[in-house]
Amino acid sequence: MSLPLQGLSAVVTGAGRGLGRAEALELARLGAAVVVNDYGRPGRDGTGEASPGPAEHVAAEIRDLGGRALAHTGDVADFEQARALVDLAVGEFGALDVLVNNAGILRDRMVFSMTEDEWDSVLRVHLKGHFNTTHFAAAHWRERSKAAGGPVYGRIVNTSSEAYLAGSAGQPNYAAAKGGIVGLTTSTALALAKYGVTANVICPRARTRMTEDVFAGLGRPDEGLDPLAPEHVAPLVGYLASPAATRVNGQLLVVHGGMVAVMERPRVQAKFDSKQETFSYDELDALLTPHYAGRPQGETFAAAEVLGLKRD
Image (cartoon, rainbow, N blue to C red; front, top):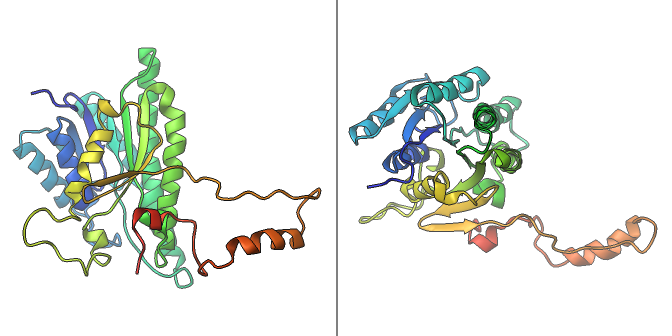
């Protein structure tokens, strides 16, 4: 039986648990050889002793199922360790074809209480980690394209969050990092399209170590697949990594529980033109204050209501 990713190789970061694990297993099921990356620290806040166990366990799972897999236990937020990760895939499998960025940590706090380290550490792992691997993968594809004299095969799937779309009061660092990942992805999509590479970003909702508090009140069903299982997300990642998604580029998709929503770029809601050479305070007051009158104080521009994501 022909598999859509047969003959391709992939790197999945943060793949020792949760979403990353489900994605790595799905890519392997579809035929890809996978480098399973996980730093292996036990705390979801990025603390604890680093361990090769999670990455090695998932790589062994893939091999037990008849696939090809290697473990990499480096920190993708470290520039040189991210280089080594991409080099490992290229060295072992001959090329890198798919990059799935999933590694992340949480250090939640309200913006007025957050420390500098809590801000920096989350931006470092999420946003810099995504950049580091993307940088080395992009350089690899660019060199391959130059050598081939034309486009090559390359896929990037990045991980954002509904915290970016809908807001999350206690996660200013996380929401900012996830918003930055969307910007990184759309920029990368434009830059690499001529080399045959696509870059897309997903906002997944799943029950994992990272979200155990968010979904604490939503129990697992007694029978059937949990609607919040990471296995609902993994098939979309497999699709975006495949040749079938060649025309999907620079897109943001929300995915959970058997639902995929393709998001639009922000659109102009209303437009006001000054009747003078430039706006004055009084003219803006006369135009904008009535426009926002009657709206709940603190309402944001986010698409939460459209997606049915309104928080209690």
